[in-house]
Length: 152
Image (cartoon, rainbow, N blue to C red):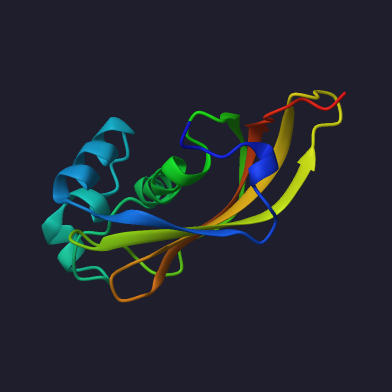
């Protein structure tokens, strides 16, 4: 598997994920429509033009999903048993159509499961930046990770 097992995820290790991803109008429109979010900032160019942003704002939940998604190939692809939660999620700068998002992830905490010897809990800090180097999303993600060899 491309993902890392619990034992391979050392605290302090940082992954710089490639490639980045440019957000398209279709991404934003489809995600916003699929999640039944009628916010005109995401859908109505004329409305958005009059906002503080002056243009359509990309749905922040799409941004979060993209930031986490860009991390999967290097970290959890095939080796996670599931997400346990997302904490301290922030969107300090907006994402606009045409922005290119890049992501880095750092292992900030880990511990073996107290009840299941075949897994461990890993906390990742994911940080997404745009093409100008501005942070557009950060979060802490708890993941239940497979162990390569269960402890006795």
